[in-house]
Image (cartoon, rainbow over the protein chains, first blue to last red):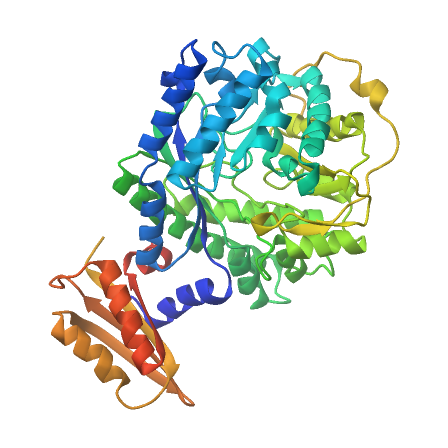
Length: 454
Length: 91
């Protein structure tokens, strides 16, 4: 029989430590929608999504009510649209039409984001890939719920530097296209090295071509729960610290496993994976930076932060892997600056810099995430930032990403308000020195050697 | 999911709280399997494990009824299925 203390512990996690299941994401393959006729393609896409996900939101809410733990987001990921639209789209505007169809479908089923407006160009761009990338600024400006992700490199293929250069320009154009809303379009656009096919988190979710027809992936959360657990063991050694994170991660992940299995059963869609990521929100206490501080740093970004994050990331994986039958996605700790109020505060006072964040991405689950930068940052500088991050992912065989927001008309130190889960923050300064001669070389960085690891 | 439900009640203590909850369960064929209660200063904290196998309404119906009882006795009453606790605390 369940013990009263266990009941109280679980309910306290929800009531005062922000425990929730961050997302149930339904992956839907659109490969069977493909046709050379654009109107027919859009109709097929709309019908497939609205039919597959018609009960997704209701089932998510039902499970949340029954277990007493909030399921915050219900989302959809689809097959990369550059593949789906490859024979029907002859110009960027054709892809925008697909984006608008996706938006209509997302609104119809009531999800809060739909990901997969994507292209996978790790080694090179096809005509369709280039057209989709060129359509991104307009597509993200004209839609509200659509997220776009572009894969620019991998450990196996190297880095497509032509695409890196193009994406620097596209990030700037997307910022300008949504200038009236603090360049929010860039918050829905991410570039990846070594992307995962089953990531349930936005903006990077897409339904990989290796996946089945439909799948349920669940992303857990709970930084507040980890921070609370660590507050009980202040001053203890690293063995106790690591054990505490591991045990807490186990408990959090078990909730994700339960939700994933139930959602899979009720929607009659196969269970894919549970993503073990600790995802912060702007809510007070729901912060990765607070965990870093609880581990002993005055502010996130102080010397020792990278080591602390490495411990956190590794122990979350160790605890979570046993708690779920299938683990996947990104699985680790996210460090999105605007979405984490304590991280935004550390950046504001100068404790956390872009360079320190780059070091942290070597050991965390993703990369430079939700960082507001000055609006006059050049496209080549953004490409340089992207190239650095792709290189870290390529060499270290891990997923890395860049989601920066050049806020048009604002400079370092100015405040932006993105609202909701995206949060707010001050704009961080960027290294002012030029890298355009490097970025403009063009071509491809070869795949790295897989031996002689030093 | 199984038919066991965990009901928790928190609020300021006064006469009739347990009666209100337990009468509802008796009237609706809900069997109480376990009950623990503590009062700290003036506050009551009660946890019941109940079996709803013979309960006729749906789970949202139960949540709604308990909300109304909670309002009447000025306590917060919540119901959760047992699985989440088993998953979290048992390997």
